[in-house]
Length: 67
Image (tube, rainbow, N blue to C red; front, side):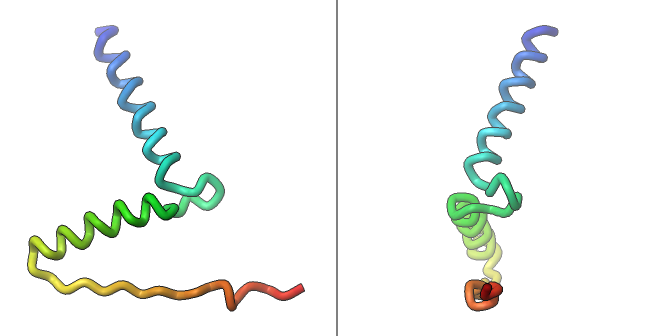
């Protein structure tokens, strides 16, 4: 039973590392690595299902407050 508990702890740690590597700690949003991983998965899934894909890019820098 201890082996299963240890294995579960290892898997949980791996998920924490993956989350830290693919998301921003402050906002919880995907970082570049996380976005690219998710985008690749979405593109491959759409290709396999013969579905169209769209991507919208919005530059929010022009919306920042000027002090």
